[in-house]
Image (cartoon, rainbow, N blue to C red):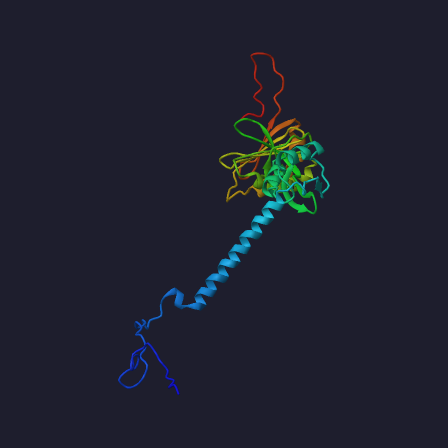
Length: 290
């Protein structure tokens, strides 16, 4: 009978330690710090999420940009929502054609607004998109209150009800102002004040001037010039003007003359200068001269 034995090519006792246990290959010792990026799974997950968000945002922006440039969203009309008194249809069409480039999504609203605000009578423009293919425009027009004479050139501008100077054409009957740069709002306020104080005379105020030295001059509809001069602490303009209104009709009747200039620069009275009369050559009329 054959004797069956288990055979092996491994020598007896190989792979066992002196204690009878199987030996294992040694591993290098790990650094106990664990500070590497790959040893921080939470940080890796956070970075991965952030990259996915940025990638999705970039793809979305690219898709919107590509769609917005397609010719399927053209601008078809401009809708002006406010009634206009001065701005013409031709001016509106010119502003729209010169500024509306692109489609509903790509048109630059700031450019459109700027183009409308450059029109002569436009004070302010508000612009927005109106789906699906329109631009809505709301305009505020200037309301002219007076003319403004430019001192150096004599050119005429306009003054609106806020005291702002703007350039436009008008043939309306309005007072004429002149003064230093930046004083238009002051003259507009003083015009209303002077008009109220001169009301009892029944004369229409048509001009107000303020010199560089802050001396006032008024012009009436009948050609009368009123020299107010500077505002003085001892003789304020309001006080001198009130005295003039109270005594001028009687003084004019007593003197029986056509007055050209009233000088109110005196602290306790006023002087009247008559309209120069036609005189023969070589002679001068000294009446009313000081």
